[in-house]
Image 1 (cartoon, rainbow, N blue to C red):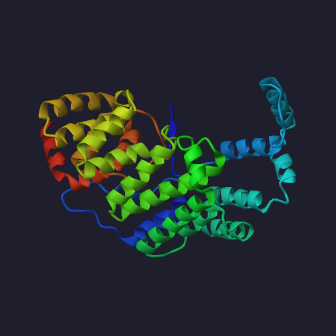
Image 2 (tube, rainbow, N blue to C red):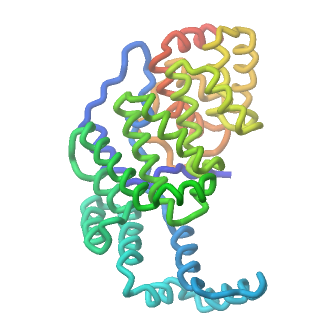
Length: 336
């Protein structure tokens, strides 16, 4: 089964931005920070948009039973014109139209087209978080300025929601379509902070995201384990790995993260045992972490568990740890 990468941003614009910021790899390791590798193309938001359309067309309706709701959904989708119906219903709602433009911008191939769409969206709704996030991500600027502006995007969304909203919906933030743009902005902020080597700040962002959405539909736990290890927070990394039981059995990031966690705690025998298990999960990761194979300039847009593509993604997620712990690469080479 192929798994899609989670980054919805525009690849070309982000690649140019990352290159312009000229973040240099640290000596002692051939692993690049994950954010420095060219990201993949943005993915489609078709499923999210469909859910949004269904909610728009059913709002204000009281259904006596689940059967009534299903009958209504069947009626809406029978003609295959769900999107047209929703657009007609919401044509006078500027917030709706702004978010639609933001979706189009996130799916655009050309960054200039995306900027045009984002500008139109912000004129319709200055509070459109996806549009604000994309504007910050696409426009050329220094990294520190980009981080500050992304913090402002996140802060504005938080003020618009209000403290009570967070209290009532904590734990379900990805399940609510209205909060997904905020969660995307949070993830973008975490990535920018990682690029800037502000790892403690990035950790705080990802921890907050997991509080708001423990199911972690965005997959930030994989980046977080690499950051915990990079900052030598062994217990925190162990706790995180244990929060998602059995993932070590089939997920390369967690399997190899456990190896580093044991090594960091000087539990050599445990590290060697974990190494054997990690090799069974995905043997291709080892060459990247050991520094004997260079990572690709661009991560794959999808991957298959256990193959080279997953190894490239896993190595990118764990790269902050390998950059800061070059001794681990030396130890790993001795185990080959």
